[in-house]
Image (cartoon, rainbow over all chains, first blue to last red):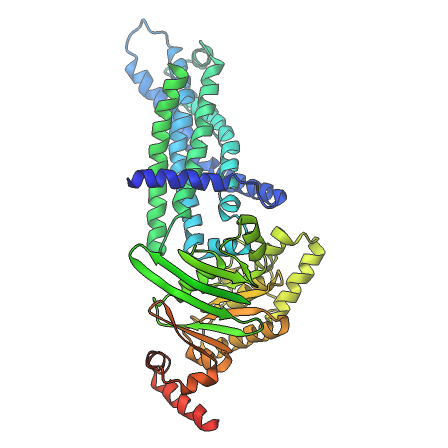
Length: 246
Length: 254
C-alpha cells in the first residue's frame, strides 16, 4: 500500500515539476548551474572509475582466454562490448546515483527542513519546478556526454592494461575494437543513459522534497534516494535491454 | 484585513484547529500566542495556504482565499511576505541575491531598479555593507533582518512572522519587534506575528489572540491582558515570576 502511495506522489510531483517555469531566463541559468554541479564536477570520479574498470575487464578477459583457437583481437572486441553495453552506461550511472543522488536529496531535504521550500511557496514560486526541473534537464543533457567520455576512457584503460602488460599488440587490440561494430550499441547505451539520468535526478529529488523532520531525516532521505534510484536503474536496465536488444 | 471563519484542521485523529474564527486588522501588530502544540503555526500555515483547511474559509479583504483557483492564489501570495523562524534564507545566495529573489521572479524590473529596491529594503532593516555576504556569515539577528528585508521586497500588504524573536538575545529581540512595528505602521500592512515572547506581547501587541487547545480562547490588546481573569491565559502569560512582577508594575503605572 505504501509503495502505491509513493508511486502516486512521485507522479504528482513530476506533474508539478514539468509545469511552465515562472521565468525562462532564470530556468536556463539554473540548468547551466546544475550541468556544472551534477555533470562537470563528476568528471573526475567517472574518469578514474572508467580507466580502472576498462583495465580490469581486459585483464580478466585475457586471463580467461586459454584457447589458441580464439584470436587475440577478441580481447579488444570483448572490452568494447562490455564497456559500451554495460559498464559505462549502467555501472557509471549507479556510481552517479550514489554521488549525485545523495547530493540532490540532501540539498533539497535541507531546504525543506529549514523552511526554504516553504519560503518559495509563500512567494508564489512553484518550488518543485524551480528546484527539480533544472536538475532533471541538466542530467538528461550532460550524462550522455559523460558516458561517451567514460566509454573512451574505459577502452583506453583496457588498451593500457593489454598493451602495457604485453598480452597483445596495440594493432590487435584496435582491430578488436573495430571488429563487428554496430552503431546501435551506442544508441542503446545512450537511451539507457538518458533514462537512468532521469531516474537518478527525479527519484532523489522526490526523496529530498518530501523530507520531514530534521537533520536525521535528511540523512535518511539521502540514503533512501541512493537505494531507490539504484533499484530503479536496475529495473529499467532489465526492461530496456529486453525491449531494445531482444 | 484577513478574516478566518470556522476553520477546522486535523492531522489524522489529531484535531488541531477547532472552529477557529478570528480577524487580523490592517495596520496593526496582530500577535498569536499559545503553548507549544496549541495550533498557532498550523493556523498561520492555513492562512497563508501552506496547508489546506478541512472546512471553513480564509478571507483576504473579503475575498475567499479558500475558494480561489491556483492563479488567483498566486496573485495573493505576491502580496504576502513571510519571515520564518530560522530566517529560511537561501544558503547558496548572497544577502543581496536573497532580497532580490522575489523581484527577479515576479517584479519584471530592470537590474538597476532591482538593486535600488534591494538597497531600500536593506536600509529599512538597518543593514549596510553586508550585501555580498552569505547567510552563514551572518548572526541570527542579522539573518532575521535580511529575512524581513526579503519579505518586504515586493511591498506586501500582509506580513507573517513565525517566532521572529526565537534564538535572539532580549536586546536584539526588542530591536526586531520595533522594526516589525515600524514597518507595519509605515506601510500600513496587516502583520501577524506568532510568538512565545511575552516581553514582545507586552511591548508591541495591538491585537493579541490566545490559542488554547485548538480554539481561540481570548482576544484583546495588551492593556486588556493586564486585567484579564482568564485562567488559562494568566497561567500562560504570567508563568514566569518576572512577568508577574511586570504585570503588577504596569497595573500600578496605569
